[in-house]
Structures are given as structure tokens and as C-alpha cells.
Image 1 (cartoon, one colour):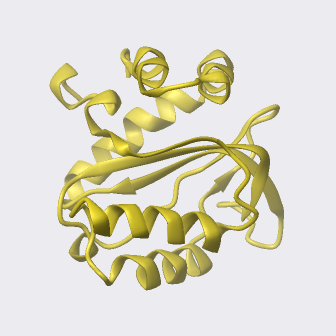
Image 2 (cartoon, rainbow, N blue to C red; image 1 turned 180 degrees about the horizontal axis):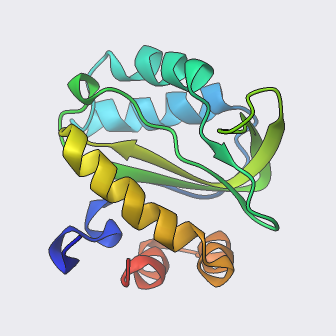
Length: 156
């Protein structure tokens, strides 16, 4: 992935939810959908589509101290590419990607909104590099604003 298309280029300031207390995936997805609609980033198919996709294809990753989830949905629900970022103080219950019978508490959630399937694959590869670094995850959990997030993700 080129520097021009790094993770920080896709982070949407309008879809940044830091240090939240969302209690469920539905509550988080509703908040992202509401803001996404407000700013023209998603269409009205986004919310039902992301809820349905997460139920069928869980995205939780158990990574030790800071668990992650990477929900995403079909490209036809996206109007403009973005990454919505949520850090959650208590964590939100997500089913594990590799075992849907196991729930984890994800404290960092990247919601991907890509318009082109190949772009989503490239972005996922970059994101996997970032989340495999425990320092990166801890720094995201502690980020207080958009600039902090961009600094943490600038090398990915």
C-alpha cells in the first residue's frame, strides 16, 4: 500500500468515537450509521447490512490486552470511503472471527467503509499490520483526539 492510501488517509474525523461507553454492536452501528448518513458517507442500506454481515461473519480478534473488531459491509452501502474508529472503555461484545461461539470484549473497533472490494483488501492488510503491534493498540486506546489517532496510524 502506498503512503497516499495509508490508514490515516481513511480515518474520518466525523466518524471518530473515542473513549465511548457503547454497550452493544447495534448501539455502535446505529451511531456510525446516523453520522454517516448526516455526512453523506453511507446510504440507508448501511445499518441493516452491517448488522446482518456481523451476525453472519463475525470480526472480533482476540489480541491479548486490547481486543479488536473490524466490521465492514458491502460496497453498495458506502457513498464515500472511510474508516470509523471507536475506542470503548469497557469493550463491546463481538464474536470471534475464528470461532463465532466465543465472545470477546473489543476495545478498539475499526468500521471499514470501502467503495471498491480491492481497496478493502489492501486496507485490511494494512490494518492487520497495525493491530499486531501492542503499542499501537495501547496508543489508540489512549488517544484523546483526531490528531492523536493520526499520529498513531501514520506509519500504516
